[in-house]
Length: 105
Image (cartoon, rainbow, N blue to C red; front, top):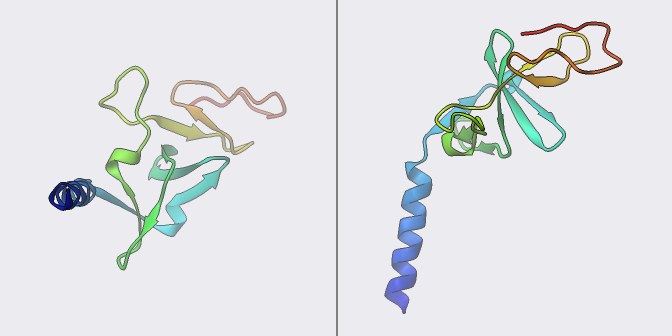
C-alpha cells in the first residue's frame, strides 16, 4: 500500500514538473471575472484560470491555457475592445450595446 502511494505521488509530481511554464510580466496580466488574460502583443490575449509564482516570477502552466473549441491544438485567443475594455473572440466585433464602437480585430 505504501509503495502504491509513493508511486502515485512521484507520478503526480513528475506530471506537474513536466508541464511547461509560460512566464508572464506583471504588466502583461489582467484579471477579469473568473479568469486571467495574458497579453501576447498586438491586442492578442490568451486566457487561463490559474496563475502561479515562483522565485523567477509569475507563470501559467501551458496545459492550463484555455484551448479553442474548434481546434483543440490551438489556444483560445481573444482581443480587447479599446473603448469598453471587454474581451471578444478573434474575428468577433464588439457586442457591448453601451460601447461607442463596433471595433473588430
